[in-house]
Amino acid sequence: MIETPSLVDQYCHGVLRTELGLGTFEAHLARTEGPPAPGTTLFDTQTGFAVRRWCPPLLGLEPHCPPARYLARRRELGVLEAGRRLLRGSGVTTFLVDTGLPGDLTGPGEMASTGAADAHEIVRLELLAEQVADTSGTVESFLANLAESVHGAAANAVAFTSVAGGRHGLALAPEPPGPGEVRGAAGRWLADRRVGGALSDPVLLRHLLWIAVASGLPLQLHAGLGEPGLRIDRTDPVLLTDFARATAGLGTDLVLLHGYPYHRHAAHLAGVFPHVYADLGAALVRTGARAAAVLAEILELAPFGKLLFSSGAHGLPELHVVGARLFREALTRVLGTWVAEGAWSPTDAQRVAGLIAAGNARRVYGVQ
Image (cartoon, rainbow, N blue to C red; front, top):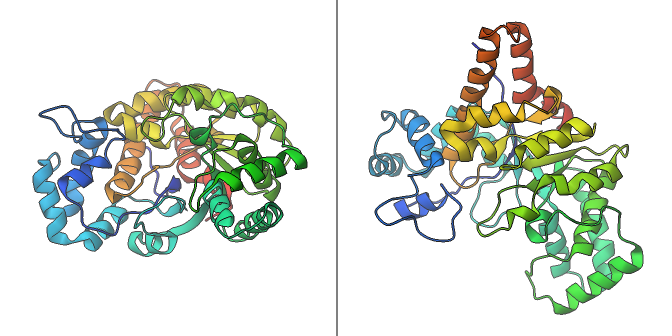
């Protein structure tokens, strides 16, 4: 039996503080631009089936109980008690929380207390830049305040994360933009922007990435599947090859988040570049009962010291549970099979499991 008593969830979000109806709950199970097929629900997905498998027992119900019964029990317990049982039932001992999404979501402090775990903040670069732009009157003040804000955030955060792939695509020029190029892009963006406007300018996105690289904190880069409607051909992590080469030797680790369905490409980059790591998160949550097959594919190429567990969970504490349970089950199945076949020793399998579950994240992010 492969044991992973400690789990560091190296990328997740907070959970909603509000009670949810069936439709709202379902909307968090699959990222879609519209309703499910007629006569079905979004529980009819790998993620939905995994929620029904792993979460009901934590709320005192049998596995695979009907969605309506599960949600009735959830309402009966109340959002706080249900969240407490679910987060603590996930077995995660440390949450690294991206606080850059809108909505009434819990922050790292609440995640720690509710989940009886440690928690640390990940700062989203694009949101930070947008907040600075809202309060900066000129190009000069914006650029100065931006550099100061990134520096200040680095004092308390464990990592920066970027959604440049979703905003523009990962095929950005790898080198840092020049000062004149940055000033020109900032001037155009600020002139056309309303308060709260999103940052998608490729020059400013590159500028943000390089400011983050200079901080020395790990930099997480979203790749693969993302928001509904995203052109995923623009988020293949292989498009980051030149950026990975340009940042080699600078002392900043790059973590390729999610990756699926390009998870083998992310694993390849983690094998090529010493400072590049690959994340397991959304790949396992999205694939549910097929998670072991996907994990085995990631383990084909990546050195085992370069892979990190995450749930990628957002909004529902159930997704934290599913991420952790699917990871543990998939890891036990894959490594256990290799041990049974004689390809691996039990000692080596246990050591690798500990690295992927927590040890690698503790080393990369400097957390306990």
